[in-house]
Length: 307
Ligand code: HSE
Image 1 (cartoon, rainbow, N blue to C red):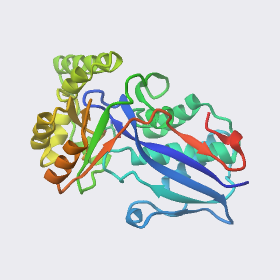
Image 2 (image 1 turned 90 degrees about the vertical axis):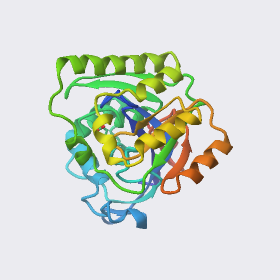
Image 3 (image 1 turned 30 degrees about the vertical axis):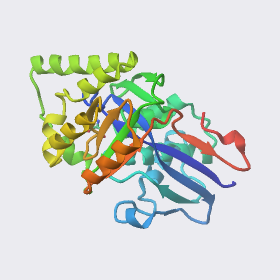
Image 4 (image 1 turned 45 degrees about the vertical axis):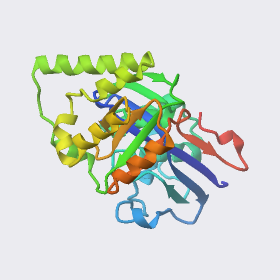
């Protein structure tokens, strides 16, 4: 078996009120450089070593062996996987989804499973429990999905996204999804549910119509999770005011946080530099949509492209 590379984009989930359902693939990547070896190992960048294991307890391997088992295999041919990671861990940019999607593709390649994208997404949803990160990581673009633990429906949006800037404002601390989910109420009233889903409906309709101003407005009106989670992000309200002053359409907590994403129809270099200067405690980075999703390249075996 020759070497090959798997590349998975970062993702930003929820887009405000699209809780556990809506997500976008963004132009930051994890690349898995895979080569045959005597035993399984993962090369992890130094800064990620406290968080990402280098042995068989790595989420990529665990997902790959889960996928292999689901298709009747007990083992995977051993490989060394070198990780080139541009996606910060536990910051709300889909780092664990990149591992899950990367692991599924790893098994797909090593066992020649010839999985379709839909089959990969079904596996990924069974592992993650919700599709909002894994769906765009596999398909690219914006994905609006519904998963009931068994059946999966989705719509992909790609039109009109190329000129937008998704400005990531990344705080210098980690937030585990589990902790961020534990802040959410167990129940809300019927009336609150109707109101919150109305906001999500308008978000999705605005995305479909490419009405970014309205989409941005809905991002800031979320009632499902942001009112509870923003308390964990000290400057959330002040940063929201600042980006609105610079003509952002809106801003939301990316996934479970703590990263914030501000949506701009136009963001000049001057404004970007100004924000970077005014928010020195944050990594401020202008990202674009990734419209392709998961990709596989192999110098010697071009037929191994992800389907
Ligand atoms: N929709 C998820 C959440 C994304 O907000 O908790 C993180 O997995």
